[in-house]
Length: 339
Image: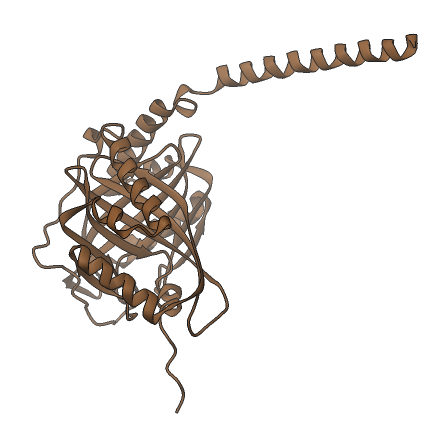
């Protein structure tokens, strides 16, 4: 009895000591961390400053400063089959990526960032780049992207280049390829003022609208979804599949949905969020889709970035950009039967 009691006392003492040590270690760790890395408001502010400085350095072409804003284990993902496609690891890899741009460029390079949204550990931007190639400097290409940045310890740790028109992007990076005009009607290159953009103001309200939109989507309540979009709502999905196109108004979205159900959908479908970031005017959601089709019972997966443009508290536009456009088009395109 005495021995058992003694064991209990010793055990309790050890646990108390361990708890005290853990509490002390935790407190010490929290004290040693930069407040920018622990407090949400400070993290958002820090991320805004980081992306602002990163783009300023990118525009200036100062490689040393650019590299100071990425982690040692940084990875850059560039899709396609062009000369610049691939993964670039670490600062040395990203330095090579930047050199590729400089060596291929014909001397003209203009970068604007018309949209951005910031989260605690993720930043999404929309980039418009106008540049030429050494082999034909008179041709000014417009390359449009969504960029996804992951943030770790106050630096950029990973980035994905996601072209809106991957065919034009590959053509640009393929020597002697034919020029492709990608400027939409009325295109005007413009940037948001990143340094002036407040990532907190109204971002919660915008994100809440988008969350409601998905909530009703998962419940299949189209009527409730329709009340969250503006009168001039537009849904755009890129690519070369039968679903690709620009759908005007809520009726247009219903047409897209009907085509998806009638011509593509199988008996399995699951959509989840893989990440997000929000500002007053823009919400980006990374979707993780798993589904099969009416012609292929095997479940395939796909990541897409949905860019919600907000206006007066409602969704004005949704642009659907696949992370891997070739895989995305393949998923939604029925194979042609052999004759």
